[in-house]
Image 1 (tube, rainbow, N blue to C red):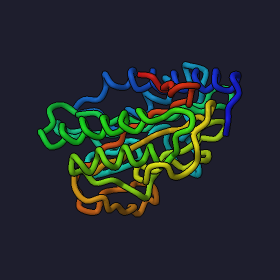
Image 2: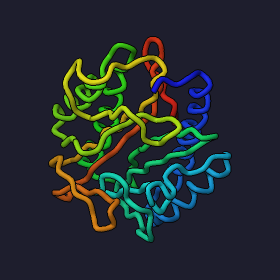
Image 3: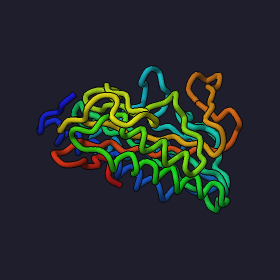
Length: 246
């Protein structure tokens, strides 16, 4: 799980490609575009950077990015669905560069969104940084989850527990799991050179979720909106560095 300096340099490039893909896509996230069009834009951009989309054909996944709209939590499959004014969309992007992966999700407003959705986006993003803020050698995985969960509960948002963050490296998903809940001083000890994706998924309503018949798309059980923010980071000697900078 501890990455060499050479591996971290490749992971930085992969992560930067992911961050740049998010920045590139952002201009197109408007009412009237389809999620399939966003997928094609992302594919073309990632390929143009001498990388490949990590998600394409991953365990049979049929697209390059995940596009999860409104009550869809994660793993929404791009389609002919047209984004509407007032939607929110979580876009999860992975890129593989010379065998190493970057992974980052971000949630975006489509046009003008209501105050509840603004609240959800603001505090889910802030919960990510609450989790990141505790990362340094000697801290525990449980400390990250505790920080995220306490922030979410304080803001009355539902914490999805079935889905977790993870290690990142030569494989898109490596150990350790990084839950968005937990107890202080429990779980694996963080060490310099570990690379993990931290990714809170918070719901405006209850935390319960279920999976649709496509075997990928996960939605909230109460049909209320969900948001998802994720960065891949490396543990440094005195903290962390974001690899998927935007």
